[in-house]
Each structure stands twice: as structure tokens, then as C-alpha cells.
Image 1: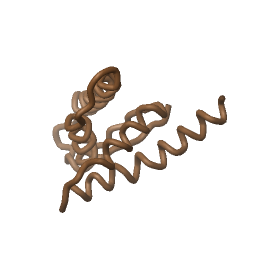
Image 2: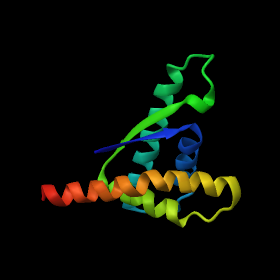
Image 3: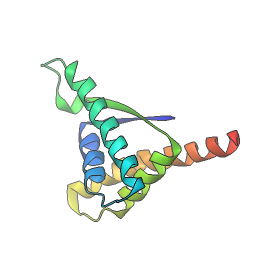
Image 4: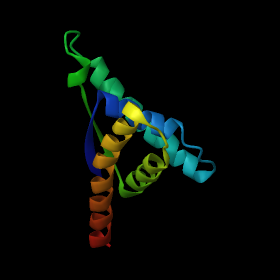
Length: 111
């Protein structure tokens, strides 16, 4: 498992990426599980949130396995958008891609 920390806008972007994916069949179970994991991480942070804390300071730590990271990288790269949304997607990709590569290397080393 690889942990990634997302800021508030990145967390919102990754949830949108997952929700906008049009995946059917057995892969859909993986997508639902990832969305549940992200929502749970957001809920933990928000339940323990100091009312005075600025949203910009929020951080969400989520752990993914190699398969989940690979799926997230593919979904993020398939999003077509412009402007601020594109910058947020790029920020998410900048975190996902190296984590996915490391998770794949770790998986191969363990095999």
C-alpha cells in the first residue's frame, strides 16, 4: 500500500475523477471501493476539523494498492478539461504517477 496526501482541492478532484469514470462490470467494484475509501478519509478529517482551520490547510491521507493506483492514473489521464480544473487534475496526476510506478516496482520486487 502506498499513502498519498491530497490537499482539499486535489481531494475534490480525485473524487470527481472517480465519479465521472464510466466503468462497468467487475472493475466497477474497484471504483466503488476507491470512492468509499476517499469519502471515508474525507469524513475522518472533517469530523476532527477545528472550525477555525482554513480549508486550504486541510490534508487527506489515503492509501492505495498498485491496482488502485494504476486505475486512478488511467482515469486521471483520460479527463479532458481546461483552466483551473486542468491544473488540479495535473496536480493529482503528479502525485499518482510516481506513486503508481513505485507500487508497481515494489510489487515486482516482492514477486
